[in-house]
Length: 171
Image: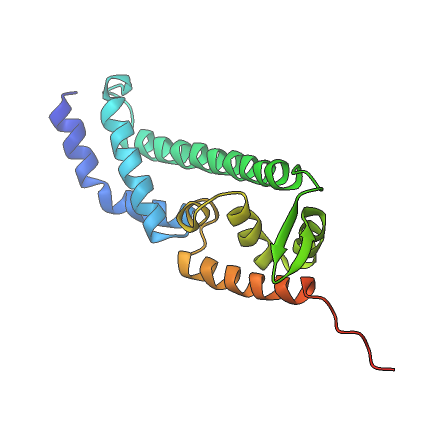
């Protein structure tokens, strides 16, 4: 089978492959990426295709395997990201004080306050404190940058409320 015939067969299958990709990813943008990556795999592995076998089945199997490998990779990246947050932020020296609004706050106090936040506010705050940019967090979590900024803003506001000294009760 020549390069042109594999390329032509692949071009003829693009619509079917895209529909399959949307079905397994559940996301049009991810489906486009999957289709592109699968097409590259087909062209790179053309020499592994046997001419007397089912081309369509071979290509769909390649797409499924690319999807599975990408999914596994993203799960590993999420695990590494969570481990990095825990080790880098929570392993810091408790004796360091942060100065905010004329109040000494230790990292221990800050950690405890962050742990009191809802998960949707805790994750962006923790990732930002670990040194990640909004775009990096968005890429890893799949949450839009705008949503992350809103959650970080709300999380910081809630942290200020948790960490602010409470006025003494009048007697």
